[in-house]
Amino acid sequence: MAILTVKNLTKSFGGLTAVSNVNMELQKGELVGLIGPNGAGKTTFFNLLTGVYEPSSGSVELDNGEKAKKISGLKPNAITNMGVARTFQNIRLFKDLSVMDNIRIAIHKNVKYGVISSFFRLPSFYREEKEIAEEAEKLLKIFGLESKKDELSKNLPYGEQRRLEIARALATKPTVLLLDEPAAGMNPNETLELTDLIEWIRKEFKLTILLIEHDMSLVMKICERIYVLDYGMIIANGKPQEIKSNKRVIEAYLGEEVS
Ligand SMILES: Nc1ncnc2c1ncn2[C@@H]1O[C@H](COP(=O)(O)OP(=O)(O)OP(=O)(O)O)[C@@H](O)[C@H]1O
Image 1 (cartoon, helix red, strand yellow):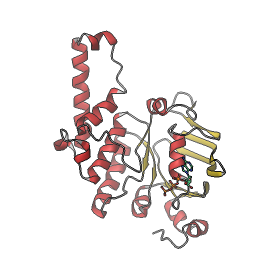
Image 2 (cartoon, rainbow, N blue to C red):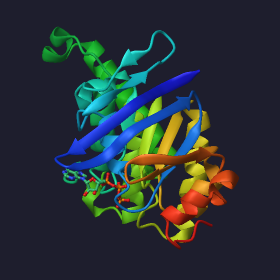
Image 3 (cartoon, protein in one colour):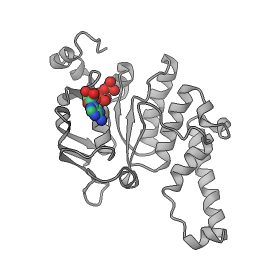
């Protein structure tokens, strides 16, 4: 079953068409890569999926099992609430908040307090707060950040900030997770650990994952399918082995190694 269906998606900025007539289907539970040379339109595509930009034309539909709903054109918050979460190429944490509070805020978005119970601090309010704290700690543990929970997020080393951003995205309870260059700036060891972690959370949280990544070792190791974007257009879609030897893909990278 396709959980995300993209039809003829296009985004133009003045005379430049950054995303051009893109079609894509993500099946429930798939882990799919989106690759392409610099400036190919990958991040713009994510911005269209998450409501940062409105498409010039085309549509995005999300089907969580009940009925497909159009999400293109909705505000980012609405799309997150429907189950699509993301991370950013340039990390966007709440830098002056603690690690724990970064997660807590994301969980809060999913909790509907009664106004009365929170205003009067009724027992149900404290019960919910306790549950949120427990859930946040569980996530921090998975991401190896439990000992850092009281630190300001801006003080974490780079690799840990990247992990925290993924944990925060998971705290919104997504069905579809979009990762924009999760391994950017990581050393080979951190990248290897992250690769395993992504595969693990996919199964554990029953996610469908689409990831943009320049690190081909990560992409080739965990992606079941790969889409290749070049000048805003999908030029190939297939299994890692097919993509590696695809002539158009090799040409698009102009000698950049796809290994
Ligand atoms: N807000 C904008 N206004 C004008 N042009 C934009 C805007 N956002 C992106 N572009 C242009 O659209 C094209 C695609 O950019 P995009 O950032 O989506 O590529 P990318 O594949 O993510 O690149 P990279 O791998 O370097 O991150 C580029 O030519 C870029 O300059």
